[in-house]
Length: 330
Image (cartoon, rainbow, N blue to C red):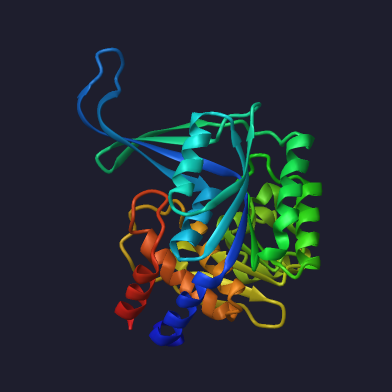
């Protein structure tokens, strides 16, 4: 598998990313980290007491896809809705300081910014606190966001829809977005949650993990080959292609006129798989925007995933990290 792409070819592909203009639409979050040490148990309850050293913040959800795409050198704009609160401004700031276009962020007074707060003792996560409101956007906010996106859709090479089932993607909004993008010659790549999968029909490329694919197909029987599951999903959803990630089993690509293309996972030390799916979605999207063959995009995505699972948290990777692991595996 390691010989399926040369280092020279990989360099050419990665260098092409910097010329791409990408729009990311989706449910954004702020990942908050409370870092500290545990040396005693609370006298109030049998729980550890964390002595806090410092706090840190990273973009999460669709904003992590944005962060990944930005880190790989492309020009990226985010279209999302946050709360009109401190965490919403913190998320905007985290993205803006990285050079992301945040003019497409709408602030909603009636919902908080989705925030995932992780309490860490060294490298051990003790618990996670979720602050969010899981309901559809109001018609007013949804139409405002759609108008802003469609007003600038022609300038983008690719449209990425990152769904975390927090209420941004309703049927009318999503179908209009995919249809208008197609009419303007912009390909759509989607990373949906199974509960919403039917509203993303007709996309150019969809990425799912194996668990999501089986849930979406209403077939959790592990004895049914993933090849059967993926082929049926691609046909039922009228997709040009479907990429299913399988953890330590690698990835498998389903295309319209090709047999399923499967590659094994790269052996690497896994610290944290959170955000790896966002990295795969990001790399595959950039490859599609650069008119790279899908099989080559899957190979690059596989290498990219092997980098980020070695990092703690919703991590990203740089072009040099991606090329380094490809060179190392030769």
